[in-house]
Length: 217
Image (cartoon, rainbow, N blue to C red):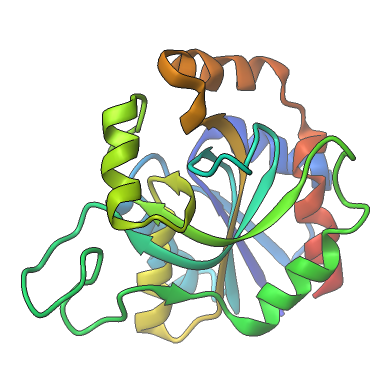
């Protein structure tokens, strides 16, 4: 199996490389850049040109639940758009003709859950649930409240996961997203500061979960 690892930021790619060392022929890692379009274009290229058999999306995300803390990991059992509305009869987050939520590949999801034990620092936790995506960095309470009003069960928010999931759904490629939480909705006005502080504190070891997971599949 050839595994595609897709991240948005150069910092995230460096962290993945720190966790893995030298990549083997089994692993193809790419940086997409921010946002849904960049993520979708890169995912499509990985499938068509690099011929990956699955795509694992990782990187950082904002926490949306009081149970999710900075440096926790959220495994996306489901992903959806928080900024899509096509009108009735579609649900908020649902593109016409597509699922309202994209479910993770069951085998990858179970492997990720099984890899959680012992893979990360004991001060961090692993959660599994809904990740939502949109083309906006959510830095304030109003933005967070708007997302939670429509997706009260959302655990984390990012800018790429749902777009990658949509591409994989359309092209029949297994997909899973999991994210290291960089900041919390419950940090109040300090949320943006928390995000920048995260990159000062985080090391490649925070992505060791990815290595444990990849080694198990």
